[in-house]
Length: 209
Image (cartoon, rainbow, N blue to C red; front, side, top):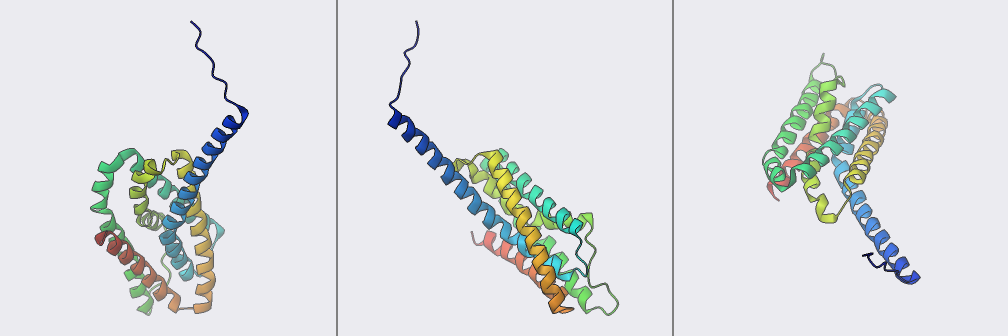
């Protein structure tokens, strides 16, 4: 027996397409807002790094920005896959890890700035890049748990949030470098204070949540 085929009037079909498009637009808008919010810490940290760099190579900007973007996307995917159980476990320690890592790096920068013969600018090593990327992307883990609530497509979310984080970090690093050239030696102390401030902000926000 052949199933009957239902033909919708033209205006009904157009309405359905309009409704679907509005849902996609709402989800995309929510993703963009999430991306902008998640990229703030990474932007500030990248700006602090740029401020203390005597010379800023395009390769350094690209590597740090891409790594930050990848970590944001990876943390987001991990939170989405792990669900609420993983989110609850991560919420117990992620803020302490971020605070400890950023506090350690920031404190070291400040101490080195006041040492007469110590290098004012720590090398942008692979380990430092990974630490900065990880510490600034821990919030993405918790956000990944909420993605199903806003019916956001996973692939689109990963691309948008990772891309925005990378672009914002690159811009922050370049702007920070220009400010650092203007400020001179105090830029290292300011950069260290920024890292300490970001770490403290992450800790306080999670403890007061």
